[in-house]
Length: 401
Image 1: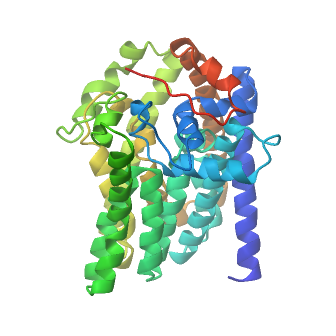
Image 2: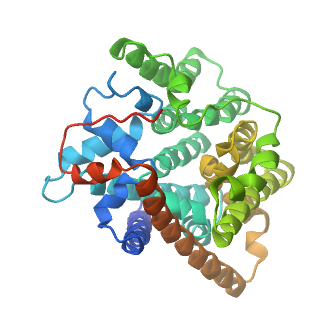
């Protein structure tokens, strides 16, 4: 790595971190809560209790938490050990990990764009600011930003022919968010049939991600009596199953406004993000498989497995949360579109489009934060006690039946 590369990476990382911090701070201010308390909302309270239970995570007292992947809580616990307790409580640490993950993802995408022969500035700027759901998730206590950083790194190392590093990054991504393991399908196909790596060493490295996943399951079976698998544990929130492709999107999304009594403006945002992201991903498959060089088939392959899996899920969350569930496909679809037509657009038009999308992203991220605080405070009164315990290292398990 040259000095210029290091300086560019540092600038991209710092800018991403500050953008996420600004979005979170603005959202917390709109919700009328301290910034660190924002780490409790969305699913943050789940990850915080798991993080507090490290170094031997989870407990039979909290069976509803067993369906959550351990990677993000582990990172929160590790950073908490490194920072003075007076400097950052658990809520702020959870936010810091998400922002650091987003910064790492931006640097990984910058490097991947250069690996693809693209000028990385515009793709990285659009990656950070052009997708409202991404900024919302990256600025709050979610594992997606960390999983996405590891996933992009895995694809980058694959393109560089470094199979061992690619599988290590993928295993880490899978420990942060289990669906990231889907990327192992196109990676394995590329390693076996494109790179022609069919020896024992290649097979051993390919087995690392599923073995990491299996190791978590074995640990849970041994450490938690009565553990029946992550799908059973996660069913308390969403009893996910499989259905015909796109059935849930066609059936449930138009009913979301009635089911959740969403205001008109918020319903419009959910509708646009759900179907807009679907169209964006499907069009990237056309551009990637039909017009992209064969050596870069990994990009549309990643989009295909992530989107293909999630359009086959059943239940309302498969529709109204589609834009978050498929975030792992976002950087790869973006790079396909940039390679396809991005270079043909005039710079002033790109700047205007980027500015408009950035405003939309900040609006969505801050409005989502305020909405989550208001809605979850009404539905889950125990979160008030969770906010009061952000300096405590003792986990308190809740039941969500």
